[in-house]
Length: 317
Image 1: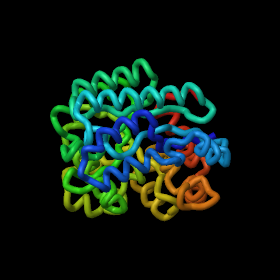
Image 2 (image 1 turned 45 degrees about the vertical axis):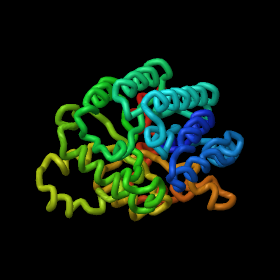
Image 3 (image 1 turned 135 degrees about the horizontal axis):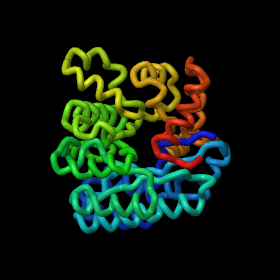
Image 4 (image 1 turned 120 degrees about the horizontal axis):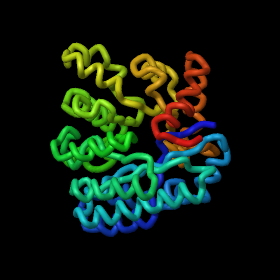
């Protein structure tokens, strides 16, 4: 069995409500982004998704919600409502299809920390979701902002991870620079977390990055020179990271050398790629081939495929 730690789903009711709020936006890229979530794809069509999943029945999915941030288009109360609707659907899917989905990741209304904390408690305590998703910046706000301290304290107490998903700062339209800009934003967020008070105060706090830590492993030595404080480099190794590099074994080995097998989890960005790669389940096949080609012990591949996720999410598998 394998666990895909970072797959995407956009709950339909939540997407529809967010689209209504986005209707007042003047950003055509952002609206197009949302409308795509409304289209018939494996991001919101269960039948289509299951057809892709049937090709790899040994892979269970963890469901996460990706861009755009709800707070980009909605005020605090509306963001809280959209988050509740989305989290309810994720929990329902996990409960209804336990042979398909092993867990869901909550979204929070991050434009109001009190509402975010309340939804965090509900989503994890009542719905049983396995963590929360934060973006690499919150409408431009860095992740070491003082107001986020109670959320970090809560997640440390739950002993469950925070999934980091890249997004652009407000000065850039959603999706405008997702090819390399997102990797830059992820790397910046990781450096912010690693060099700040966050791990000092909450050493047990766990983050999962998308795309194997982005630029951090590749620029390890440059980071040593430019950020010489020892704690920064040590803290960067605390992150847990998925394998969603779309099939590049050399890049996986670079991440492996930096983070080690204990901090890498199988993740594919599924269903991304399924619309472009015909007769495939998206990046599932390319990622599987790339991981299999890694020159590491079989026991470490088992950690990447299954054991690390079981331990991190405290799963009864």
